[in-house]
Image (cartoon, rainbow, N blue to C red; front, side):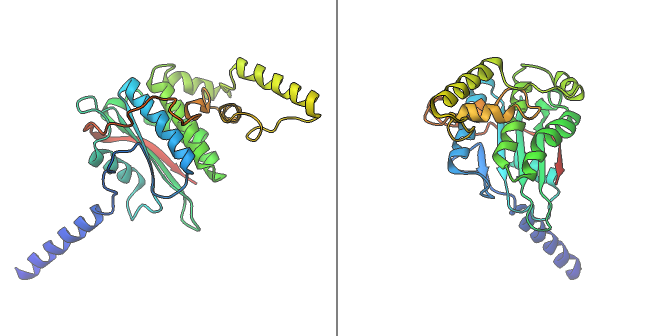
Length: 263
């Protein structure tokens, strides 16, 4: 009897210890939680601003979490626990989404998982998340250690589908056809003007990412992938998304939906 009680206590302590390894809800609440230090301060702020604006306009809460290790958890279980424990999304609507990233370190494979709340499972089917958003938009950039670019590319598509600019099926059709949303014509027009102007004045091309404005350089980068739209959603800090900051999580629930991959 004593041995049974001791064993039960050990199991409870072990389970409690394991659960404690999942990060606690951040105080104050944040949408971008870079525990693995993969992003610069400017990148984190730009992404936080964009996700705050998206949450205010749509009520859908998207949380980005990077961790140095999954502490023995399966990536899906880890992401689902985060979403449930933090209460990501609105109570009743369950419109929360968690993007979890663990970087590749040494022989430890990189992992990414997108967990969807109950309310988003129909809007973002697991197949779309897995075969296109994760494998086409995110992992190729993660392999190059471009974590900001991979997150921005994936989030851009997720936000466009969620706000109804096109459906997941429309996006899948474009990917299957080998299409790319590319760069809006107006951006191409201005790039050409700037390039020609630079050549005539200085005898050389402008270099994207150096001479071009940040939003324009990021827009050009997005055109090389399949992502719809551009990284313009992540283009600026400096108050362009209004004040107030993120107001906190709403108590959403998660039921196991989502998809991920590794590299």
